Length: 71
Figure 1: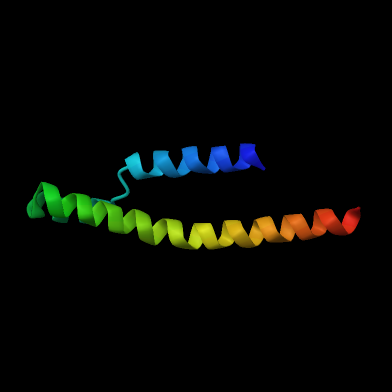
Figure 2: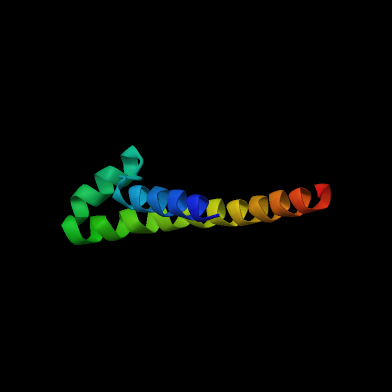
């Protein structure tokens, strides 16, 4: 469990370093300036990570329940 948590922390940290913008969003961010561009990028990452986190939690709970039922 600790190893899974460590991997999750590393993945989340790396994802906040990523540039998650499509070509249209990149052009818009360039016109806005440095501060709003960072806010736009963080918003895109937030919107992308929320469903992935929900799916991950549901998958983990499913995996844990099937593992316990096999014992």
